[in-house]
Length: 114
Length: 111
Image (cartoon, rainbow over all chains, first blue to last red):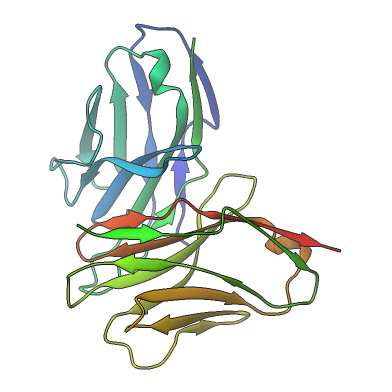
């Protein structure tokens, strides 16, 4: 089975801290994604990557950056955490098939910024 | 721009009965795909079913089927013989190049 692993299930950080959310997939997928999920707003795409060292902005990239040094790992970085970044963060990966790209998700990281 | 609409914030169904979750999509693309995902309280998003815009048959995966009506731009999920474990959030999503998500429907299965 495809496995997407997010390093932490729950995380509590203070305002201004630099925060790293790690995501690893074990199926050699080219594509990786970071979403945040908020009640009433659904899933919103922060950043995605179609290859190593490649990244593209999603719909809400402000306040975030990403890193993809290896194919299996995609990191989301909050340079200076703020309270409005308290959210559920979901990582996903997919294989480029030319048709419907089924996403495989991690279990999510619930981040609280105090 | 693409848009996915799920008009039912919450639904209830009796165990062993069938339930339909609504999804409409708005796109000008000729080629696109539609997905349904389930999110239980544990948080992980689980893929359920996919329908491509050129697929002639409605997709089915076990107890899940997709009622795809292209002219009405609807892609409703039908869950047959509901089980208690089906209680979860259900999300419809569509893509041409990247996924656009609906806001979800919360399904509660009553014993």
